[in-house]
Length: 346
Image (cartoon, rainbow, N blue to C red; front, side, top):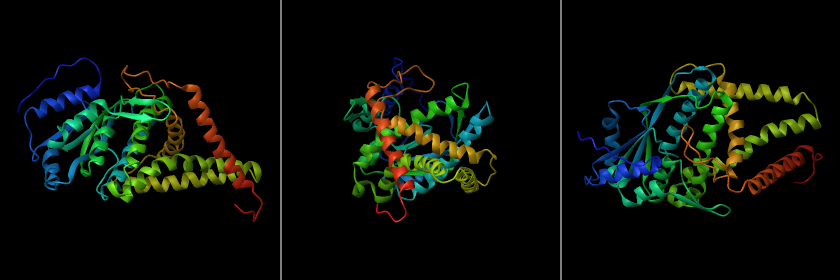
């Protein structure tokens, strides 16, 4: 075992990753070697390499990511919400992996083929990833290095996988004093990373990334508006027809989410908190609100627990106008659909 310490200026995680990968590249790794990228607050199982290595016999496999669990000292609502998110992630990743591609390579712990992780193009993608946006111009990525590694492998035709029986333990802390502020700050970062990469991944086309992966990426955008359409439609119908629609809608939401939570928990064979149903709907509805906000402010980037990035949009008034206009059209269309006369043509 050789320990190599890289001393760097505090310029961010991307520069640190690039420096570490270049240090590994100087050892001239082969296609039979593996590189494991692990966050500092992650505890990996002792058999991580043993269980990962056999999958790299397939030369088309570029990387594999793992299951996660979290140790949260604070407990309470935030701990339940985070546990629920990891259950959702586990089911989604297990499903996506069947198509030969997952939607992210988490920074918590992911295993890469060494010749790919030390490729100059891969390292450059990690360190200098950027997006050319029609409103904001050239956006240099600050957060979301796991999306950069994933996109490089995706555009170069490599498969990515998921190991559901290899679980990494993450040491988490609630980043803000309140639950809502903590969830909001994390969602802004998570969904910003997702949406900044989503468009260019869709642009690769169905033939290159496969129909299921392409459709899942499209769903990341469409589901923003379909999720918001539900409660808006219920509210319009309650105003136009009967207030009894609201309690009926609430009962349907709680029943359907409770059933969903039961299915999610069954994948790990464990119970779940009675609060999960409400937290699931919170994640879906509030998450869509945050996604719609971030979609029009892709230049907003900030680490949750570090003073890196200012988190401010460079064109706030223009972003507000486009966001409000889009939501206005959504409400207008839903009002027309709900209140149009019986038998009227669409």
